Image 1 (cartoon, helix red, strand yellow):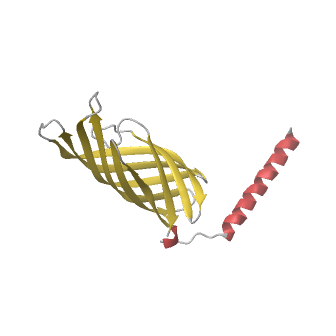
Image 2: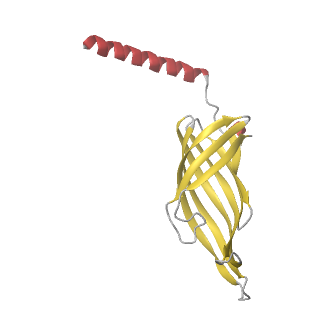
Length: 191
């Protein structure tokens, strides 16, 4: 048993020494390094009875291979047309969202990320009735959200495809995310 323990200790020391030599070969640059900047975000669009337009760009900085952080803006419009049982339109609910976010990412494994993203969004809306009833406005309101998520980073061309699942743990009734998981697909490109 002692032989195995001693052998394991030597192997562990050898691996540690090899990693230390590898780190010495690639010294970290101190201060701001513009090559660590990246841009990304989400873009989505659909038309029909359910209309969606989403543009949410982000700018981030990769501090090291394990940590990144950044800021972003949100612009979303969604509209849902409700129909009577005979198929005629009854009314249309439309909502707008604009906001700011900050995000922090941790990469516990090279191609896996965990993300926290606090946001503040301004939401507003309108109901348009097709039976002659006057339109109703939904007054604008600032709504906080706190998105927690995890995802995968898939290197592709000059950047990486980012696939993520997030959830708004604050569950504000006016949150643009509702009480359900949010599936995002985006692309990050280094600057």
